[in-house]
Length: 206
Image 1 (cartoon, one colour):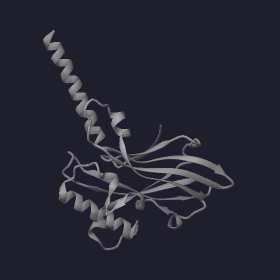
Image 2 (tube, helix red, strand yellow):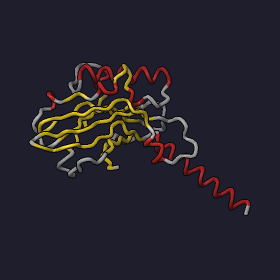
Image 3 (tube, helix red, strand yellow):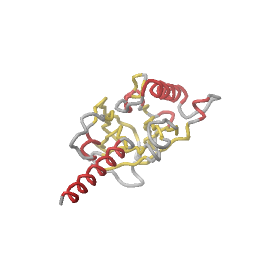
Image 4 (tube, one colour):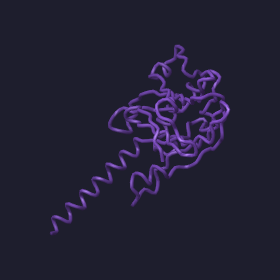
């Protein structure tokens, strides 16, 4: 009986550690909902978050993933029928995890009527010199400074790659069509979920 109890405790602890490890590899920097589609205008509310990794005791992964610090909220209206979120990312061996990670930056939104270079930039919503969407990660001074340099480079050059060492490490951009893949429901919140280990980006309905 004692062995069985210890075994169950160990399994629960192992599960908890795995969940915490997964949490540190999943980021939800944006939640959004389409407020209205009318007369060729898409009106969307965006909320920008920073992951909070404190006060984790006794909470499961889903609870922790939703407990983030709100950075900014805004309503953005653009002409068009299809809305796109453009993200830039780069892969780096940070030494924080047991593998390389992808740092992903929501960069801008545009539509089938509004060209990407005329779209609305998103990085100002989480710009504090350092990208505040990663504010909950314990990076250390050196890693934090390096991530700040990458972010500064992205803000300056976007997806244009000059002859710059940092820019050469950016692996590309991910553009997601919010309409043609699946029709998003008006007045329903969706999460922009970033998987840091793989660089994958997906939308998850709440």
